[in-house]
Each structure stands twice: as structure tokens, then as C-alpha cells.
Image 1: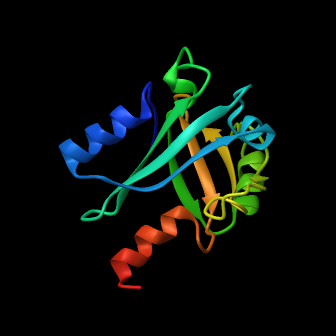
Image 2: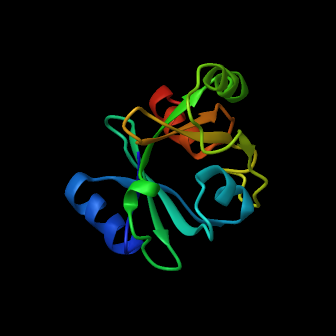
Image 3: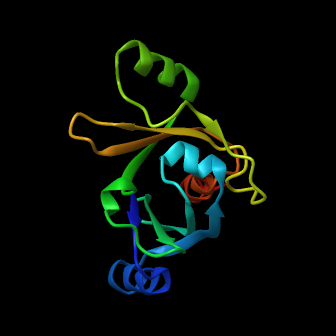
Length: 150
């Protein structure tokens, strides 16, 4: 789940103090690829992933560097890891499911997100859902390894 926040440091502190969540990834992200996949012009955020090691639940927090956008509903979303992003996108097209863009593969200097392939789509009520490819070394892999003892 991704949540738009107005102050990343305050929000990280809140989730750590209230729920014991730990930050497992933090990095600024911006650029044309993110604009394309999210449909948000001028996409420029500091992004953090927090995890609850007991349950394995992750939340993603994002603070827009150019100020909080008018409606968090254009960014707040849930995400699912899938085996084949491209096949799923094709299936959606064939079944008339609206997507924000075709799948995008990130070319990013940070190795934890470089190579991530993903796209956004809408549920029947307009909620945003992200699907992304399984990728060795993705920030979510760190949490999986923790639970499997690797």
C-alpha cells in the first residue's frame, strides 16, 4: 500500500513509534518513467518503504518535493507482485480494463528499484492498483528473505 504524506520524516517516526515499523528502503524518485506509469506530471517524491517484520506487511510513504498534490487519491494505491506484468497487461487490454500506461521498466541508479517493471490500473471504483514484476534484489525481496531465514 502506498500513502502520500506531507512530511516523510514525521510519518516515518509516527509509524515506528505507534506500530514498530522499520524503514527498509528510502530514496528520491522522479523522472519521465515515473510520470508515465503514474500519470502524474512533474512526479518528484522522496519514497520510503516501511515494514512490519512480524506480519510482513509493507507500506510505502511518498512525499512530493513540490508540495502535497491536491488529491491523495491520484497516488494512494495498493500493489501486487506478479509473475508476468506484460501478459497481465495484455489480458487487461483484451478485457477492457483501463490502465494508466503500458508496462514501464525503470532505468534508475538505485539497484533496489532499477529494472522494476510495472504499471497502474483502476478497479471498478477508480482506486489505483499497481502490479510489478518479481525481481531479485527489489526492496521487497529483503523482507521475504528475512522471513525465510536467508
